[in-house]
Amino acid sequence: MKILDRFLRPSRSDLAVPDTHLVQADRRLLLRGGLVAAGSLALGGCDISDNPQVESTLGAISRLNDRVQAALFGSTRLAPTFDVSDITPDFPFNAYYPASKIRVIDGATWKLELAGLVSDKTPWTLDRLRTLPQEAQITRHVCVEGWSAIGQWSGVPFRTFLEHIGADTTARYVGFTCGDDYWTSIDMPSALHPQTILALDYAGAPLPPKYGFPVKLRIPTKLGFKNPKHIMAITVTNDYPGGYWEDQGYNWFSGI
Ligand SMILES: Nc1nc2c(c(=O)[nH]1)N[C@H]1C(S)=C(S)[C@@H](COP(=O)(O)O)O[C@H]1N2
Ligand SMILES: [Mo]
Figure 1 (cartoon, rainbow, N blue to C red):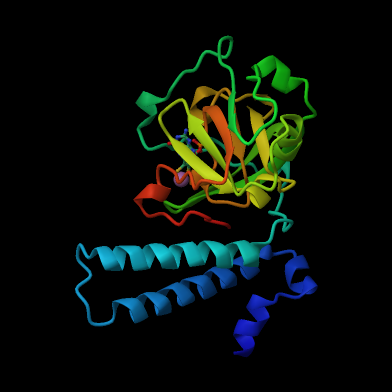
Figure 2 (figure 1 turned 135 degrees about the vertical axis):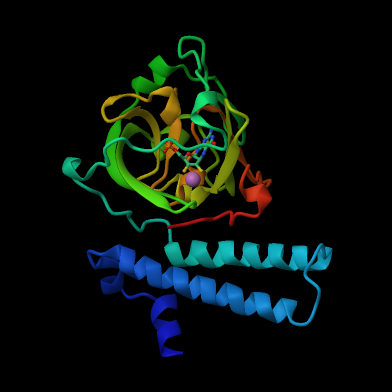
């Protein structure tokens, strides 16, 4: 109980320790423990194969897990940042298809479409995105498949962009659709997080196609699959948009 208390109500000093990874790893263990306990409670003694009731129970547990994570991770906790010397040489490419299928999008004709709860839906060109303030960050990208790497991205703070387009920042979700038929979505507090950026550059040069040209969302407080590349459209909405991996059972919140 004491241990639970400590993690459910982390003190300021807990959050300020330099190695936040340790604190986060402990929290993840706690989450996983909670999930497993709830899971075995629900599954005790029944046949789990193709059981729609089990499916919906697990879905409900995952939604609960989303809410617990949102409460634990908060919206202002910062991801660790690194030095130029820490950058991973040959930052990995990853997608749901092999490198031979990387999409090459024409930046001259590309326009970022806007939909949903946004007051100005004028599509944005790359040139116009470059007129907004830009910010650089060196952060760690963590892929659910078991690798992580440190890279440098720069672009428009996503909060600045959302303010420019008159997004309803009380809406629940921001959804992204991509030029390679990928899609994902995030909660609004994470969209407004100071380290969430609409990235135009990798290592100080325009994103190469493999890293998501013309724009990707860089969100270091979430797993890699919540960082959409080749963004074509952004939707602000209260209707749960899901995602390519999320709809196959990956936890939607996926905070790190
Ligand atoms: N459009 C699009 N975005 C995507 C993906 C994808 O397949 N398509 N894969 C995700 C996953 S699982 C990872 S780990 C990162 C990989 O980004 P990178 O190629 O820049 O390393 O992109 C994420 N964003
Ligand atoms: Mo990933």
